[in-house]
Image (cartoon, rainbow, N blue to C red; front, side, top):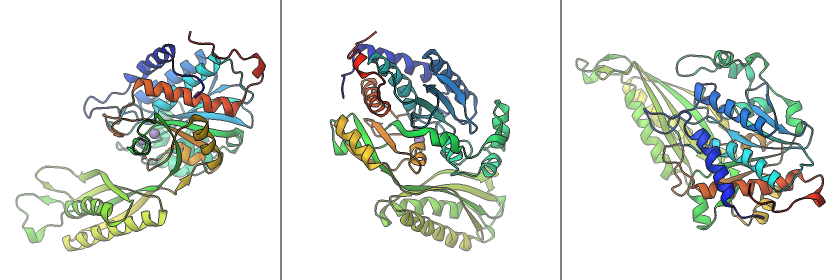
Length: 424
Ligand code: GLV
Ligand code: MN
Ligand code: MN
């Protein structure tokens, strides 16, 4: 990296981070719950807009619930950086907001370096990256690029039965304008997302590395299984009279775990399960559960799902239950622009690693040269309250992002640069 982090960089990071750290804490489940269009997420959008405006950037909402802040007028060849403000339920502080905070601070860093971008630079926050509220991840980037059908998205419901269209209207967005935005996509010359690392790979590859560059995202998807049985009394129903959908649901949980050893490199998880009606002394009439399956190869991912569903169906048949399977999302394996990734890793002197986590960058990679930077996460824990990155590492991440952006946007007047202007 060109400049080492300085005390001024550290205090800028701590100050910006303290702005977001209190928003959306989940006192029931721990961590943070910030979901698309809910109060904490809207509060963070407002904060982002204010911070961008304070930096003289032009803020706009696009047609798909994403927020943009422009340094320079939008034009083809623009360099875009950003991430998301929503979280999983009870998630960590860093997944998403670290990329947004780092984008704002990278603008400050470029100014300290005396850069005047030769290409427009945009910061962006994308709608519902986690799919925590409406079930379909990377909603904003999928809508923008046309990877999700707007009619389907408008009809998605949250757990309380509110449609995405109504949720959008409630906070002043017009859902009727959602859909592919080829004009905006055509302005993007490159996209770079900085993110906390969500595993232990960076440390395994290079224990000293603070930052890494992504090579690829494995294929991954979500399936909803609805198992229907016969609601009944927990005490008075004889074993032979039971059609309890919790039994095949339990089989799904165990089959997902078995898949970890049965399919090399695959992961399968049941992280959400809802019995209906959900009473201690009630045999459920139905159970919904969601299966998350990932493997580098999409055909293996599909084979894992088939194996788990076969086990569930067998258990359901024995129990007198039925099973309905719906694929809610699927993302094929994504390889990030190898030229850009190698160039970045060479310049920063940092390792290249794959990831099994999904990102908006994975959606953009099909359309524009895209790269991701990962910041070290000492425990590797993510999607949980213990997710953590040290402030000093986050500052190094900002420096790395600024280095990458500096190269990508160029400088209209490099001779006039006040190199190493130092701290303010
Ligand atoms: C999002 O972070 C995911 O990998 O599901
Ligand atoms: Mn994320
Ligand atoms: Mn996430």
